[in-house]
Image 1 (cartoon, rainbow, N blue to C red):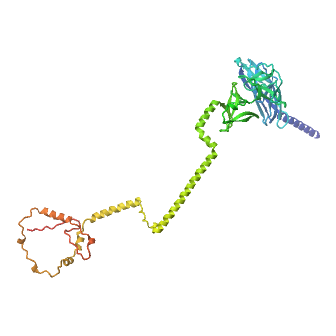
Image 2: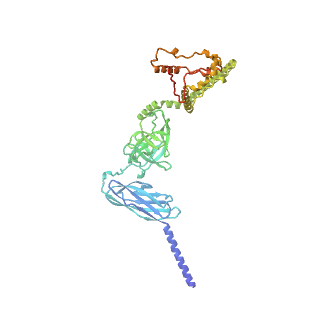
Image 3: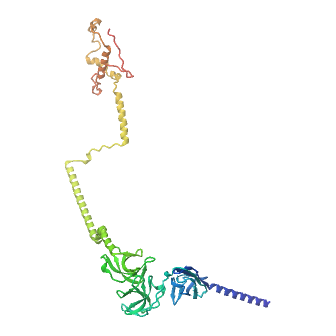
Length: 508
């Protein structure tokens, strides 16, 4: 039994040992792989390299080898050529994968390989990473050999150059990746000696790679016409265009509104001229990709450069003087304008105060005058209110009704008027009383006494004439009839239906 327990413990320990070894080996593994592109002679080709691991990577360093008879290294991110080999570096950034893109130019037909000479990598948490190495096969077909650019052979050497009282050392080994765009290796003659440098292909300016006493290396621009050195800073303004800032003082060629100042680019200061009317714009003197010197305007808001000519500046000045001359004067004399506006405001305020005082005094004098002559403004007749539309329509309706009623009243009510004439009043008016008339006063009627020899020719005409006389008779004014004045009798008679009727008397 004890023997079985010892065997079981031994087997368990062996299993745990193999398990731990497997875990350690898996955690520290990685792979560096490449792409296998195809291209033609004279063309450029991109080769990608990728290092992937199971853990986050720390620092990575790799050395690549390639055949210079088939490929010429142009450049790449995190890649530097040194001694015919390419050095790849990266800090990992806490990622489990790192990528590089390398650019080559194909020089001859055939197939060639890019191999790994050495590689080291570490995990971000510590410990080394075992990297499995790969390689890249580049296939090159027929193309245009005239496109091949071969770096010229230089015979110059190193040496010391004094610039502004400080001694610099000329570097012979210039990495291809650091050569400025548009520049190629060339010999530079200065002070009777030949130095290794780079020259602009489209011009005559040189870029010399110098090291200061502290060992810091950088390019300096050399102008053979003036034999002067200055700081070198190349700025790309498009895919195929660039400018190199110059340190020449050209203040005498610029208009007055451009004032001299300095502009810092990547820690280097260059002379610049700021537009006082538009402080966001600077004008700099630079060398373009065609080897020509000229003016460029820098927009600080957009971070862009554009060509700037003095002729366009003069024209813009004339247009600005015409269009914005008054505005510029106002800006320059803003304090005077404000004082003038305040002066006008105070004068207007003073005039208003004087007018208000005069008006107050006039009202007081009028009040005293009204009091002296006993004029009461409250006795003024009230203005007749303007009737609104509804009251106006209502009045029109009432007036129409009154007119209609008045037209109906124009017909004489003969029955009512006959009642006004009393028989007794009539008798009293004429002085006749009951019993005063005797029978002797009346004569016996004799028809012969009233005979008229003339015959009535037209009885209808006579009756019509009598009717017209009755109609033309003026209606008595009832208001003027006094209480003692007897009313006058009207001739005629009216029935309820307002129809005139007559009794014809036969005189025969």
